Length: 194
Image 1 (tube, one colour):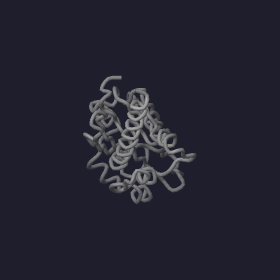
Image 2 (cartoon, rainbow, N blue to C red):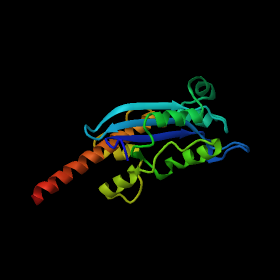
Image 3 (cartoon, rainbow, N blue to C red):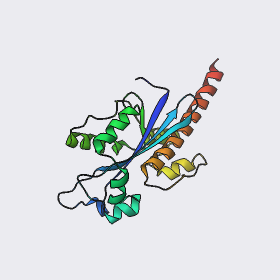
Image 4 (tube, one colour):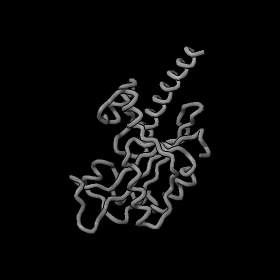
């Protein structure tokens, strides 16, 4: 894996309907991609990216607008095609970097949409599920909401939820805390054994 000093933290927003029941002929698709890049040496967020995506296979329901803030008109003005979004991800180094997500199911929509659109999958094979790491370190038996995970470190969620760029930023903050605590623990172990 190249560019190991930079880690990409990903979150997405997708079209949605109440109870996840889509009208006939429509299917779930990505409408916003959020990426926060973390420098592992300094443990800082060095770049934030938001890529709105114009939906092609579904409409933006009022439920989705209420949740994410996106309307079809706003996406049409600010968004790009899914193919262009994937091209931008690759340009930002998505293939050669460790990808951090908050859930296991974050990448399946990408795989599905890439297959439907005939677009190359924009990520490499190195993926870290931060919820699993958190559960192991915090001895949790169930997945906690992101806000609760941040609170374990005395942090508050910053910004509006259900915005991919904001969620990616907060996941990156959690990632930094977990890496910091892990490095501190490893440093203490090394001192004890030397």
